[in-house]
Image: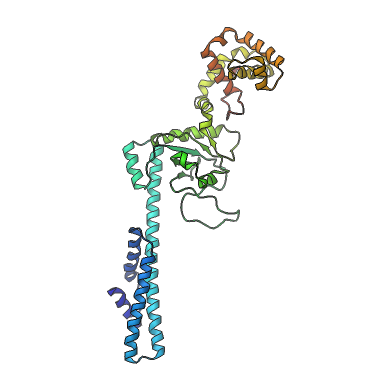
Length: 360
């Protein structure tokens, strides 16, 4: 208060307005309000109240001294100009403090993001999460995004105006950690079941070719991202709606080791090698349908393939002649299904392993 009164006296005396050094006091008041978790409303109200009380006292003194109306107007202008400067300085201090906090929080969350993908130990993760004001969840899930769309979802922060191509992309929920300025953009979702139910996140993911990795403990976040990227890379084109890896675990298993799948295919599908490509395709589809129907009957296989039962019966006879007693082994049937799913992808499979030697 003494500082404000002294500065007002200088203003009335015609001295220069307070410089940055004097205004530092009011900026500190604004910073203090933010640090206490309050808005500026109470401080601004106090400034206004102080200005009214001061003006009443100045006015009483001015009347006793017989000041003219013009002088009273000049005095009133000085009072309210001074309080405007004080209020503006406190607002600037509040905004500066909020910017500093956002920058520090952003840096802390970037470090946490990096530690999660580096597989840091739990104690280090917990300490980084506290600094980032990010309660460490029981599970996280990574989301792999297609890098091609020009508009990426925005991490939390001030909203910008719409660009020439339309409104800005949807913002991400506050707790989502983002790695967008990298060749393979991605997100890390805390508590995936809750995060994926958020309409704000759904809007941000739409049209981004998103593939959602499995939910894993925080220490395995890098694995979730690796699996999501495997599935996304195998898709023929970026999906408009997010693809959930939980619905593609079998396909993901095939994608994790394509070299091993190739060896299995070369060994188990060797009986098809002497056939023409068309024959191989038909018999491979028939064998896969037979396995997926639990060694079903000809009508069941026919229904799955959309062919006549007699055609299915003829193909099944040929399959049994080619593969013989090996089809009686559960292990062989499992390896056959792995090989067939990888080399003859169905609509449920995101892609195929490298073409094995038997198809050449």
